[in-house]
Amino acid sequence: MTAMQEMNTSARWRRIALALFGAVLLADAIALMTIGLFNFGIVLPGCIGASFLLLAWQWPLVAHWRAASHRRQQLWQAAWIAFALWLATVAVFFYNIHHNTEVAIPGNSPVKAIIILGSGTPNCVASPTLVARLDQGLKHAQQWPQAKVAVSGGQDFGLRCREADIMAEYLIARGVAADRVIREGRSTSTEENLMFSRHLLEEQGVAATDPIVVVTSDFHVQRAVRIARKAGFVEVAGAGAGTPLYLRYNAWLREYFAAISGWVLREY
Image (cartoon, rainbow, N blue to C red):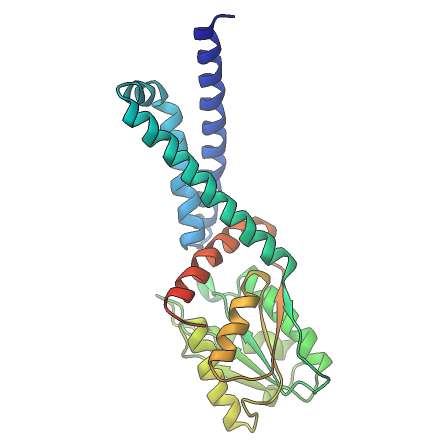
């Protein structure tokens, strides 16, 4: 096989790989958006997938552009190196999530409150991610029967229902006493979730220094606990619910950027 034939074969396999990866990423994004899910962790992979498909389609044109100058070759290589380095940071972040889904409370103090954070109610129905959080919160509510249970989630954009009401009804239907449940229905962010919940808990006699458990998704535990401490809670544990597989890595990717923006904006 000549050098030119080897180059053509290599280019063909690269185009096939780009097309396959691109199709998978774009199909995943479209499938999730068709069921009402729309966030950066879904849009970004979709955009990457579309770019891969476009690159595979226009590979000869791109190759001709690259061959026009040494500077363009360097730019091409630098772009792929940067993309690979970014993927490496994402992989490290995912590894950290996978191995840090809980934060324990120091000591043996009884939990005074359980705060369950919302995650969206498309069409005014609890999403699978939210159901997983509620089920996790239910376990802790049964473990600590004297603890107050704060459900925190505001009104989704374009909907009339409050997430906190949907969450409360879910728990009450499964045996949690209605007078234990505190509804926080004004928040629009994790920071507001915890700040507003703290005020409502204090009105019910739960001090910020009392031990609490924050229940959220596995990918969100570390950041939620840090934000809870900034909101004034002292003894904070975190409990992570598993994220449904079909949404897991999109949610983790969204959290990757949320963690960066939270650090930049000093949310924790």
